[in-house]
Amino acid sequence: FCTLLVSMFINDVRYKTSGVSKLEFMAQEEIVEVVPTFQMDEADFISGRYGPFSPGDPVDVPLWLAKLLRESGRCKIMTPQWMGKEHLEEVLQKEKETEGFQPLPFHFMEMATLLCKWRSDVKDCTEVERLLIEIDHIRDEKIQRGISRLTGNTYGYKMSSLTALEINTVRAPITYLMDTMRKFSKTAGIAKLAGDMHAHEDDGVGPSQPEDQHEDDIPQPGTPPGEGAAVPEEEEASPQQAPKRRRLRR
Image (cartoon, rainbow, N blue to C red; front, side, top):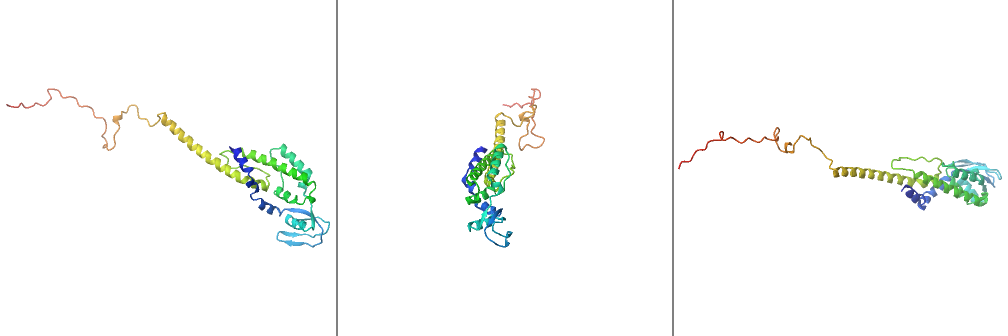
């Protein structure tokens, strides 16, 4: 039952795409390295001060600024080390060999997706995209196996080293699954209690009376205190004790 619910939600496109645009927007605050092709002094922005910019000199800027400069042809974005082919192959191998999750940048998939838009700046871009898909698939399978271990008595489950996109993907199914299992557990408990009571009734189990107490000895409703006990039968009067009747005169 758990595996069915998890597969239904995890593989649902709605949960894969829900909130992705917001995550991609937040990921653009991550710092990347660019090589500018223009000259400019330091500049102040809301998120901080960046620069100076000199042709051929690498400089760190937020991804949103790198995106603007790249689209205007004023810089080249350097591929992050964690996005290199060799590094991704190592991550993929460890993901296959271990049950846990390998540590990745929090906005790993969002940044990789944005950077792969400029294929000319990413070395071995086709191979990198293939590795990204395989890593994402393996980690999804681990998440499903982890959630399938939940029971009706589970109030929390810890998964470390999840990325922002993975958290966004599993939040809804985990919440729904745990709520549903608690309801089923509560319903099953009530049904079991009702079944036990019905079984006792069928077996004739009920309030018992003392063996030495007769049914007639039980006081009836409305009987004054002290009364209601069994009254002994009166002995039949003997002929001598019987009252004399007067003879009728003719």
